[in-house]
Length: 125
Image 1: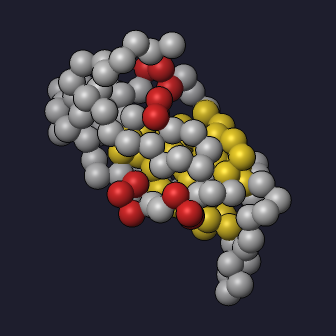
Image 2: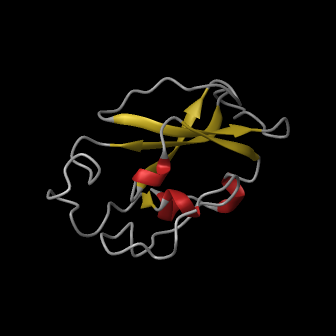
Image 3: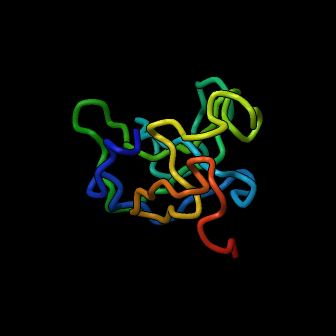
């Protein structure tokens, strides 16, 4: 969950790769996944779809026990607002959701009025 992500866990991020236009998304879910590489598109094993992922710089160290890297993955489930606007998240957002416009490498982002189902909080550029 994004509330559980500490910025020290994502300090080695150098870029975020978006697989679709985030301008159309009120929120994305984010998680820290254990992945075999610092870079490249990770395999995706959840329901729904992956909408983005983080790339790590050379300073990122793998886990001593597993040899994997913790990288952020951004995703949505079939019942999220973008595909079911009148559904469970017509108002509010999942705990791990953030407004994708507030994300940048090394910054965990946050919720906004828009991500919670309200109006756009500021002009989208």
